[in-house]
Each structure stands twice: as structure tokens, then as C-alpha cells.
Image 1: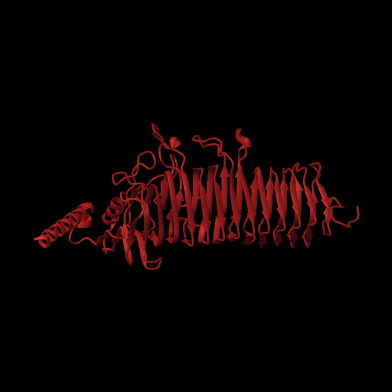
Image 2: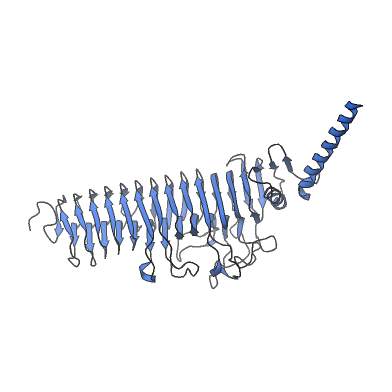
Length: 490
């Protein structure tokens, strides 16, 4: 009797658990033909490709998993998944495949676009991103995302008055109010399309952004993009690869945030990493390879942009760019840093270090490193090779330029309207025109112990328009005015 009672209780418990399990799954998961299963022990949803449209099954997995807490996993099997836009809210867990060469997510063609930004993303109002994640704490790994179509979306506009396009805004949009995100061993592949970041660019892309942490959530009571709330994100991108995408990764309108990109490969891109208007944040771009960067910039950061009506002035933030290998051509730059605070009544607030990078270019490129109106920038220990227009250019701001090797640039180091710049221990060789050029009211700078030689026109040049510039023990042969080189006759 006792054994029978225990058996009855056990059977009842089993029925309850099974009922709870099946009832917990969305309808697509519980249907007999669905390629979708759930392991209650590991809290894992496993999804296999159907060979057709997998949108509903992927969306069902995220809808179920987003309510499960921090340990939920969506495991995609081997093969290719075909999907339209997926919208995910407050996902906490892991979204993973079997490996970048094993699990592929491919966009379906000719996807519709609703009211982007001004209305929330949903199945009824699809945004132009393949995946849109709002808030959450999650990891994306061991996956390949592919956009194979020249016109991925039905016609839409990036902004009011912009030319209509069909390009995908992002393969993965990361947005919301608060999020912690890790993307590791992810590959993203785009192709030819109809989007150009700059008018006249020689290449047009079908994907604008790869993975993009950006403020896109409307503040309470707001109805347009000018009213978005700032985004606080801890974002890490590692060991990933991006091919033929206009801008692989970026961060915009971030506050109290951390952005780290390490050990990634970017190939045939217009922009590498792009940052716009960050407050009280730390950004790092280290040990990445950026190849075939055309017409844009390998790493670009804008601060205090005048059109930012949400936060017209940003608070101090810090950007480290180190150990990267950047190859650029066709009017492109290596690194561009711009802080417009003074011009628009704000305090300059973006501080940067550019250290230990290798820049490779040809005669069709622009600057390896350009800093404009930065409150502080250190350019140190970089190797700059090739016939770029300028190796290091500092315009209208202070800087420290030390221990760089610059070979073959048209102008090795250039100061324009700069103040309080230290230029020391640099090796500048084989410049087409001038090794180190100081002009345009540049003042208060110290140039000491630099080795400058074999320049086509002059090793050192100063237009005498500024004051308190000191040239001490620089090893060179030619200068204007005469006497800037050690041992050179006045």
C-alpha cells in the first residue's frame, strides 16, 4: 500500500512537471513538427534549422528564454537559419551556435521596414536591423551572420531627407537603457549594396553596421529621435571577424559605459570602429586588424556634436587605441579624433591615447593620426609606414607625440594652431616634403631629441607665426628657418 502510494505520488509529480514543461513552451515549440526542444536541467532551448523560414521558431525561443532569468541558453544547431527581423527584450543568458563555420544566420530577402526609432520595434513595426536586443545581460558567440542580398530591405531612409536606401541598418542592434553584452567568436559578412557612408565612396555596402551599441529608446513622452534616452552598456567584442560591412562596430550616445574591442579582424570596410558622444565612459580598441579600410577611418571618435539635442555637452571620457594593425587607402585615415566642445560652448571632454599601433598606407590615403581640438591626446610608440599625407597631425589642441617611427609620409608630423605640444624622441625618415611642420599660430611647444632626415624638401619647418616654440637637440640636416637642427649653421 505504501509503495503504491509512493508510485502514485511519483506519477502525479511527473505529470505536473511534464505539464509545466510543455505549457511553458510557446506553441511553435510544442507542435509535433517544430525543430525546437527544451532541456529543463540545463535551461537550454535547442533550435535546429528547418530549411525554410526560421523566424517564428527563433522568435519563440527568445520569447520563452527572456523570461527565464540569467542562466537561459539558446543553442542553435549546425546549419543555416533563414530569418526576418527578430526583436528581443531583456534577454539574460547565452545565444550561441556550434561554431562560426558551423552555424550560419542568413537574412531573408526584401524585408519590410516600419517606423524606425519613432515607434518601438515589434513584429508589426519591424526596424531595419536583423536582430534588435533591448536591455539584458547576454553573450552572443560561435555564430556567423550573413546578409547576401544586394537590396536586403524594402526602401527606407536613415534620416529625414536622406536618400532612400535598401541596406540593412545593422545585423545586431544593441540598445535600451541598461545592458551588459559580450560578443565573442562572431563573424559578420555583408556584400555590395546601395549604401555609402560618404558621398563618392568607391564601394557601396548592403550592411551599414555590424554590431552597434546605440541609444535608440525614446524617453517618456518623446515621439522622435531627439528624445532618446542615453544608453548605459558594458560591451565587449572579441575574437570576431567582419567582412564587407560599412561600419563593423560603433558606440553612440553612451553614458557610464565601457566598450572594449580586442582581437578582431575587419576586412574591406569604410569605417572600423566609430564612437559618437560618450559621457563618463571608457573605450578601448586594442589588438585588432583592420585591412582594406577605404575612404573612411579605422578608428574615429566625435565628441560634443552640435546636433545632439539630447546631451549637448558630454562629460569626460577616455579612449585607448593600442596595438592595432591598420591598413588604409583611397582617401582613408588611420585614426581621427575630434572634440567640438569649444566651438559649441562645452568643455572638451574626450581624452585619448594612441599607442603601439602599426599604420600602413599608400599615396592615396590621408592622415595616419589626426586629432582636432582634443583636450588631451598622447600618440606614442606607433609605427607609421607608407606615403600617407601626414603621419601625425595635431590641430588646435595640446598633445604628446613621443617615440614614433614615421617613414615615407608626405608630412611626418604636423602642428596647425596647436598649443603646448611635446614632440620628443621620434624618428621621422624619408618624408616626401617636410619631416616636422609647425604653422598656423602654433605656440608653446617643445621639440626635442627627434631624428629627422632624408626629407624631400625640409626636415624641420616653422612659419614663425606662433610663440614660445623651442627646438632642442634635434638631429636633422635642413630647416627653415635655419638653425632648428642641432649643429646647423644659423
